[in-house]
Image (cartoon, rainbow, N blue to C red; front, side, top):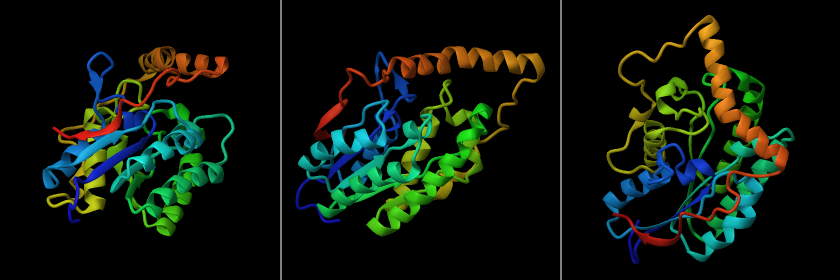
Length: 259
C-alpha cells in the first residue's frame, strides 16, 4: 500500500483488543493490537495507531460507542474483534451479535479501510465448565465467516488449532490471552494481511510438553479456587448490572506514532 500519508491503524473491541492479560494493570496492557501495530510499523515506519477498545464491551457497544470515533480517525487499517462478552451472557442471539460486528466492518470498509478480524476459539479445553457455550462460539464463528466474505474482511482463524487450547497461551483467568497468546494473535493477523516474513508458525505447538492437569481432589480444589477468584467477581458484576469497563475509556484514543 502506497503511503501518501502515514498509514493509520485503528483497533476496536473489548478487553482482548485492549490487551488485558498481556502486561499488568499498574504498568499498562499491551495486547495483540499493540503487537500488530509494531509488526505493521516495521514495514510502514511512519505508522500511526489508535486503540479504542474498552474491556467488557459487547458487540452493540463497540458498534455504537467506537465506530464513530474510529471513522473520525480515517483509518487505512482497522481491526474489529467483538462478541465474546455476548457469548457469555445468559441471553445470546448470534445473528444479532454478528449483525453489529458486520455493521462496523461495512462502515469501515465503506470509508476505504482494510478491515481485519478473527474467529473465536472453543473455550472448553481450558474451561470444562464452558462446554455449554461451545455451540454458541461455533454458531457465531460461522456467521462471522459469511459476513467477512460479504464485506471483504480478512479473517484470522482461531478456531480449530490445537495450540490455542494450550494453557501457556492464556492468562490465569483463562478468559484472556497471556503474552504468548497475544503474540500469536498478532502473528495471525500479520499472516492474513500478508506482511513480509509472516507465515503459519503461530499455529504450531509450543516446544515441550503441555502442562499436565491435576487429578482427583486436587483438580476439584483448583477449579473451585479458580471459580472463586475469577468467576465469582464476574457473576457479581452481572447481578449488579455492572461491567468491568464501567468508568473506563480507551487507552489510546488518538492516533500516535508507534515506537
